[in-house]
Image (tube, rainbow, N blue to C red; front, side, top):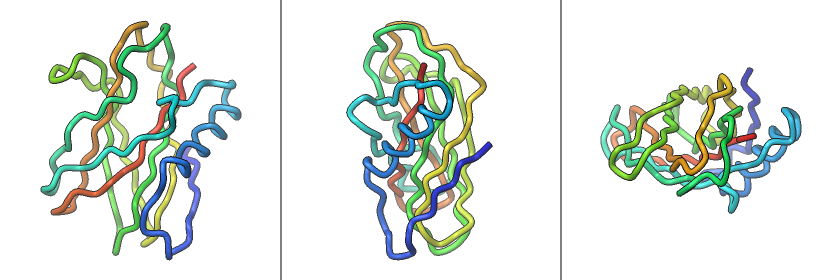
Length: 151
């Protein structure tokens, strides 16, 4: 299931607050999970070249307890045409992250979207470093806003 929230065509950027609100809403609907990162959603830019992942961006340096990943919320920036983005969630130390979830988000419109993408209840160990990275077909970096629902 994908939960899609439309923003006006005048919206060119999404704030972490836009995505954080969607994460909180989704957590309440699922089972009162926690939003991560706790300070609000974070910006995760794609690379500066098409079809290549950007750098891993840390979401949580060390989870305080064992968690289960329930969903991923991604804010897609506005685009001029169909936009396809791929996001990976990974665990592991800086430079040695391993992807535990990969999702594709499709924005069929020319304005910003916030999408909730379900995860298949992936366990994350206590003390794990959690990160995210994105890629798309754009020749320049695009700024995605990412948040997680962990229980």
